[in-house]
Image (cartoon, rainbow, N blue to C red; front, side, top):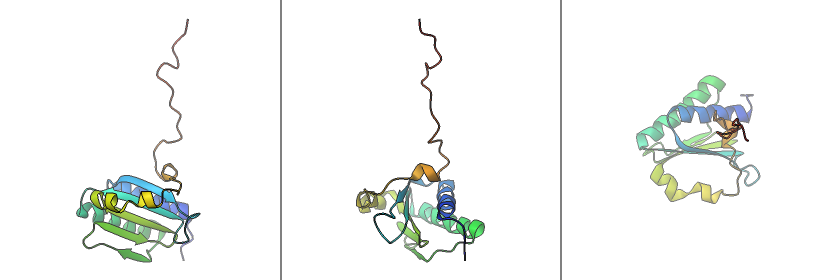
Length: 137
């Protein structure tokens, strides 16, 4: 049994997807809204081939680094929407057109978007205004 935290598993999955150039990645905290999962991770790809590469990367990294296997993988053929269910989080990989069509962000619009907590983006870094150090007279 895997004893890694859900946060570490989500982080590995997110970074694996970003490593394959996933677009518009969002991590939604859905625990308060549904019993299906604690998190939904959604990302887009420019083609079915890239969808498959992203899904493969997520599966490989979680297996290799944390010894985690999915409960279910659906949609690999044709690959416009690949769903990977890890139990406490579900990873969705869409082609851009398919993602627009299904609009999961609209369906789960009340879910907090916690993406910055799971990416390496400098979201918490404060940015000084360009003229912060100019002398005033």
